[in-house]
Image (cartoon, rainbow, N blue to C red; front, side, top):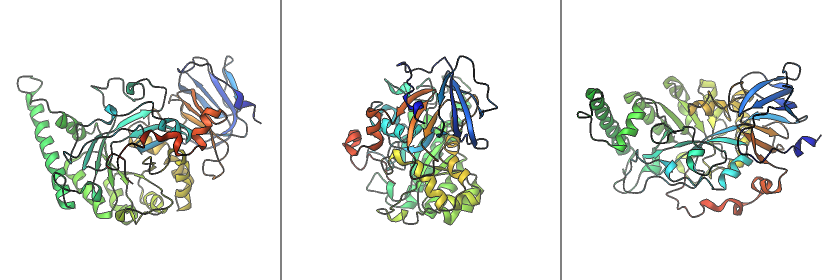
Length: 429
């Protein structure tokens, strides 16, 4: 049955006040059991109801969409991306906590359309990984935007925290001065920055709000205090097992929150990661190579972390992995031994938790944002297409629309906006 595909919303870019009811699809809510034949009702950008067809009362004024034979799945959360063409710190310093990637993102970048074609609705946009600390990331909702404020999860750019802090170790951040030349020097520089931040925080506390006693404003230290207070999560690029343990040692010393990214050697230290209570965002590459410290990457990485009790999410590191292909990471994870449930959570709810956004996104739960995708078949099948992507109750991608379809099937020429970046500005696997 195809008639649901011709359903058209009005041209407004805002959430619809009239309820929409999607009936007849298999629904995978993530929180709760899969529903063989279900109904999803959304209104004003939120999930109003979700459940089996006989358990949900559809409002009398709802527009009903026949989704029979389809699969409805939460919008995908990409915890690590370089979407939007933004570049972060330069080569003048190895540590750049004051850098904000939101100041460099092009909201008109066609990479966002490509991500929607892959079912991604929430993304952690990062500065590149060529620094010990590349700067502040930005948590974005992929929705219509004239300026970066329209995409951010916070309403006040100057005073609210809109992202995490990107860090890296291993070979990425080693280089000529002022960059460290060894792993040990890398760790020493990071610890020194944290010690400086501890001292700055102490001076603020001692001032007790007296402007005369407050330390001189320091953008680097302001961001680092947010890290120390747990308000800004460190999103940490790391690969080799010894580099992973270095991150955990520094985290234990200063008590900040951290999510490990990539962790190619995670299986070798999975129990240590679990003992630290740290979550992992991993990448699944079908043809590993190019970086010696990533040679240990395997499809079994997610399974080893799951077995140890670690929360796992998948990411693209776009453009290392195409945003259109993030769903297949879960399939690779299952092939490597992950359970179906945890692999699907790794595309959605687990990633939301790593960004402190799980109260809004990551599952089809009443009251959460109405971010969902409509699939032609099971999300783990190689034959499945993302047919529609909805953000806050508004359809943002429709594969049946020729203009949208080109972002689902087109080649590199469709989204060349990042082609001008040099290797130091790009994200690295």
